[in-house]
Image 1: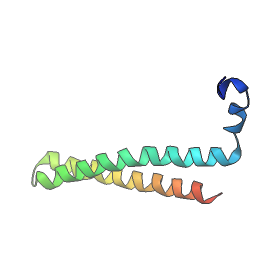
Image 2: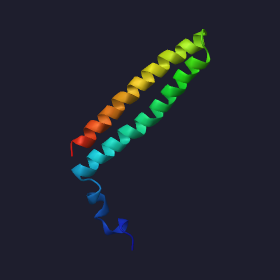
Image 3: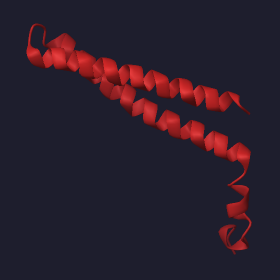
Image 4: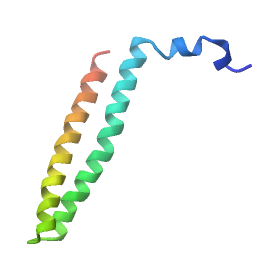
Length: 82
């Protein structure tokens, strides 16, 4: 007999404390790849100086890094509410 078949597993996973930790983990799970691709775009700008594609990489990378910083800050704020 598994824990899931007991019927109480779903109720335990839906507590307010678990919702906060799940929201924080979700925000961080989104922030990490956004930050990675932002840094890749900034690296593209550094590797192609003086070209238009490098300038596009600069703007896209800047937006993605700022967005990931906002998501990381949101995750930290959610995590502190405990």
